[in-house]
Amino acid sequence: MNETVVVILVAAIVLAGIAILAFQYLRTRRLRERFGPEYARAVREAGDRKSAESKLERLEKRVERLRIRAIEPADRERFLGSWRSVQTTFVDDPRSALTAADNLLAEVMSVRGYPVSDFESRAEDISVDHPRVVEHYRAGHEIVLRHGRGLASTEDMRQAMIHYRTLFDDLVEHPIETETVRSGRSA
Image (cartoon, rainbow, N blue to C red; front, side, top):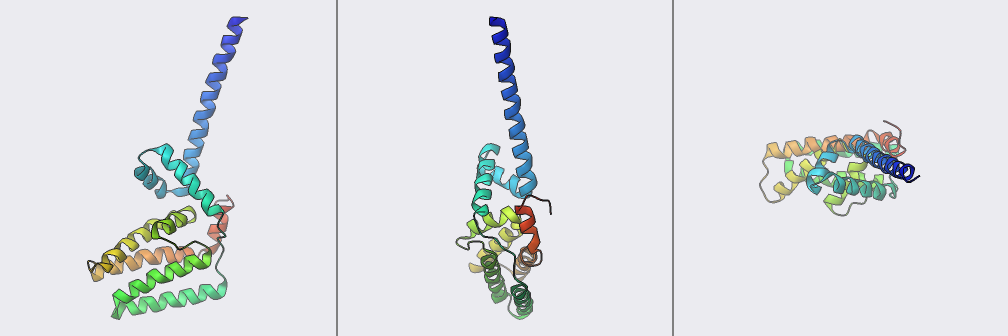
């Protein structure tokens, strides 16, 4: 009888271990698929996979509580017109065009329902629904910061505009993607 109890306990422990490993594997796989390059960034910043995954799950929950919405057609057209104007301004005044592009992105995010407090929080929130383009936002913002210190060349500012355009397109021209991703269906 004691041998049977020991065998059952050992089997239960082994099964529990397998279940834990399977859960961790599936969690990692889901987060890698959801966040793409942001997953690797989170692991680098956190220093370990478990901490990074916990942070990403907290971030998902925070963004799920937001009221992210599609852009109304009239707003979409207004934003597209504003972007064209910003691009036209770039030719004669790249510095003010870059500032206008940064402000326009903040306005688009606000209309979509993202809080626009500090940059890092915005980037984190955007990473949940737009993980493949948030790095463009970070790269563009870094150039804006250098521009503010007078350290960005015209070519740097052009690159920032390209980075910003990538996020802008994703936010404005693909409004259904967010709702599709959020509902758990593949885009």
